[in-house]
Image 1 (cartoon, one colour):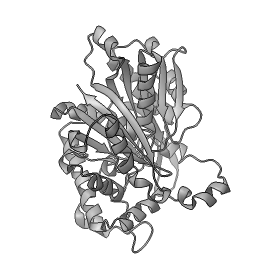
Image 2: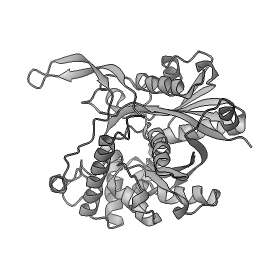
Image 3: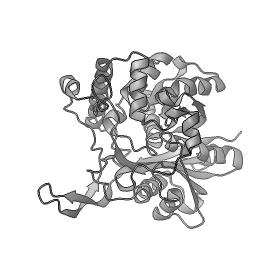
Image 4: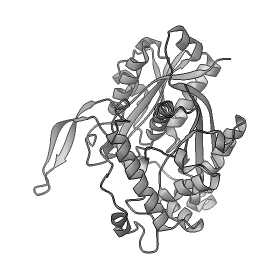
Length: 386
C-alpha cells in the first residue's frame, strides 16, 4: 500500500499585516521562497516535483503555479491553488498526499500562504439567495466568536487567561530556538510611512523571525482592552489571532521512494476530514471534524499525543478543547495564532510542519492538526511522527 510521508518543511517568519516586513511583498513571492527552501531541504531535484498544491485565501490568480515558478521549479511542474478558508494550507497537504497515495505521484509540494497586507482580505460577489437561506453565512468571524463565548458561557477572563498562556508559551519556544529550524530568511522591501509627513518609502529588510508576538503581555493589560464589538462582548485584540503575512511548504514523497533515497521523513500523512456546523458558530467546527477523523482511523482522543488547534479566537479554541476533553498539556504547547499570527491560507501548513518537528522532540506518535473554517466548517488532519 502506498503512503505519503513528509520529507522536509520550511516557512518564512510571520510579519505583522500592514506594518511588518512583508507589507509590500506579494503572496506568490513569499510562498516561492518557502517552496524553494523546502525543496532544497528535501534532496529532491526540482524537476521531480509533479505538482505544487497551495492553500491561499487572498489569492490573485493561481498563486500555486506562480510560486512554483518563482521557486525555481521547471515549467514541467504544475501548480494549483485551493481555498477552504483557514484550513487551506492543511487541505493542500491532504490533496498532495492523495495524489501520491491514489494517483501514483512520487514527489509533491503541499503549502500555504497569505499576504493579507498586500492582497487584502479577498472578495467577490454575493448571492442574496444564500443570505436568505443562511443569514449568518456572511457574518464576520469575530461576531461568531462572540456568539460562541456567550452561547457556551466562556468568560472574558477565561479567554484572556488562555491568551496570556499562548503569548507565554510562544515566547518561551522562541527563546529556546524551537522555531529556528523552520524559518528561512527572506530578503524583501518594506513600505515605511513617516508618522508626521505621511510620506512613503521602501527600505530593504530581511524577514527571518516571527515578529507578531507580544512577550510582555500581562493579564492586567489584556483586561484593559475594549471588546471590538462594544460593551458586553468578549473578543478583543488580545484574545484573537493576529493578522499576519507568511508562507509555509512541505515536500511529500511516497514512502518507499523516500526509503530508497535514504531519507529520514518527519512523518506520514494519515488522513483528513471535514465537517459542517452552523455558520453563526463556525469556530466550533473542530468539535465535529476531529471525531470523524479519529473514528475513521480507530483512534480516540487520548490516543493523540500532541494537538495543534488553530487559535482563531480564544473562545472557539477553548470550547473545542474542553468539549472534546483534550488534555491541555498536549494542546498548542508552543503557543498559537493569538501570539504568532494567522495568515489564513498559510496556517494549516505551518501547524503541520511544526507539529511534526515538536512531536519528534517529545517522542509523540499520533498528532492532529485542526481548525475552524469560515462559513461554518471544521477540518482536521492526522499525522504519524517518525
